[in-house]
Structure formats: C-alpha cells, structure tokens
Image (cartoon, rainbow, N blue to C red; front, top):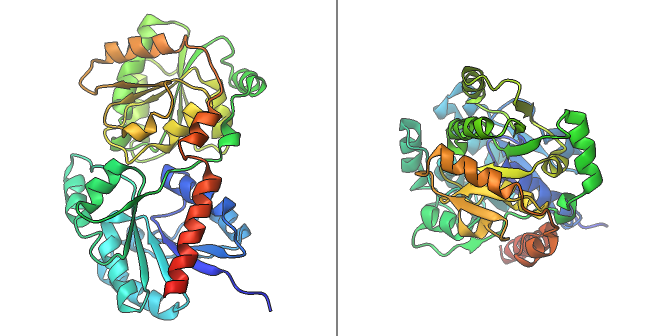
Length: 368
C-alpha cells in the first residue's frame, strides 16, 4: 500500500498573486508531493489567483470568513472547530503574523505539535491600523514552536531573542533568464518598442509607496519624453494612484497592467525596476528582477540580502524625487546581462529551498 504524504497546513490571508503567495507556490510546485502535500487555511471566502492550481496539485483549501464578516468571536470558534475536525495536521506553517497568536493557540490546544511562525516583514505601516498590527505581532511567537524569516532583518523584527532560521524567498531562476526575443515580443505587444521602460510589480498598498513612485515618474517624464511606467498588481490604493496619475496628466505614459501571470516576461520588457517600499521583509520581486538582468533602484530600508548583484542601487526615501529620477535614468543605460548564476549561488534557487523545507517537515513529523 502506497504511503500517504505528510500534509502541512499553511495559514494565509488568501492565495492571491502576491510575493508571499508566490513564494509558497514556488516551493509547492517543486517539493516532492508524494512525501509532503500542502493544504491551506485562508481567511476570506472568495476565490483567488492560485486556488485552481492548488487543487490541481492535490492541495485542499479551507475557507474562514473573518476577513469578510469581521466576526472575531465566530473566528475563534471556527478555529477551534477546524482543528478538532482535522486531527491529521501535525504541522501548521503560519504566514499571517497579526492573527498568529490565535490560530497557533487553537492548534496547540487541539494537539498540533509543530507550529511554525514565518516572518515576512521588517516593520508595520505608520498608521493606526499599522500600530494595532504592531501590538498583535508581539504575540505572534508566543504559541509557535519553530521560527522562519525571509531575511535577518525580518527575523530580528518579529522574533527578537528567539532563535530563527532565514529561509530564502526562492524563485525558479530559469524562468527569469534574460531573453531578447521575449523582450522584443512584449514591447511590441504593449506598443512600447522604442520607449525607456520603467517598471514596478507589487500590491497597491501604503507599504509599496506607489504615491512616491508616481512623483518620481513625473520627474522622469519631465526629463525624458520617451519614458513609460509599467505598474503590475492590484490592491486597496489602486484608485487613489490612478487619480494621481490623471492629476499629473500621465495617463498616456503610465500603463496599469493589473495582476499578470506572465510577470517573468514583463521583466524582460523593462529597462529598470523601481522598488521604493517603506519597508520589506526581503522583496522577492527585486530578486526576480535582478535574475532577469534588470537594474533595480530601491529604497535603503530593503534588506541588504536583496542586493544579490551589483545591479541593485539603494536610494534613501529622504532623497528627492528629482534625485531618484536621475538615478533611474542613469541605470537604464547599463548593459543588460544574465545574472542567474549569482542568484543561484546566493541561495535563491527554489529547488534548494524546497529540498530544505521538505527535509524539515519530514524530520519534525517523525519527531512528533
């Protein structure tokens, strides 16, 4: 009789097309699923970007409603009922820091021996919501047994004096290899063959600092008639940013692409990737961009581990939009070259990370 795989429960907001979700899926696609299977406990009832693929790979998705109905008492009861109904889970891997104390406590109470807390960020937003989240994060580690972080900075921020392991935000490096033919095809498809193409990929939210990015691009547009900006993603600040673009009269020069499945190809079409985040745990898109040979201009709050190649150029968020614009235009003149070997050597190859995590899960399962 064939042995059943170990089923690991990943706890996430939902499986939309974001950096965290992409990381989990990269590992999921490359782990040996005859030994380890991923299931997902999500906090929204809707259907999301990766749901169909998860099911096609043999994963199960369980949906909670707390982010839809904000009924916290019901959420606590739902957590308890879930773990009572699913004693098969011996390992839960949490990626949702603010609610971690609640789902880990429910898991512990119902006999789940391995509870992995994973830090994906190094700060919170400077808003009331961010301050409340910061208070919740202090208890993320309380009921966990093991600790992962996407960078040293993210681990120190979240876990303080706890011992944690840095697990690299890995990518499928071959997918991002620079390809001149793909570059030409995409630029033609988008009608930007002769343009200087600045790009950004990320959820539209305060953290990603789109407002400043548009300020910077306004300066670029003033300096260079031939420049365009590609924005990939969706999120809560989208309409506000669209209004800012209209206010600046940049509608013909800022291209909103939404959520895309061909982001690896879109990197090929760019001449510079701009990453002005207010904070990041690491920034997987910066790794992807460098892998495709793109110069990256990013804020100096981004962890140093993200600068895998000499194509990464740090700028302070205190620097003016003019200074950012000049730096971006300067690096677009750099020669495009393959950087796969450097990315792989730095430990960002998903095959290595998937193998490590697979061994970790199996060892923990056997110990418990």
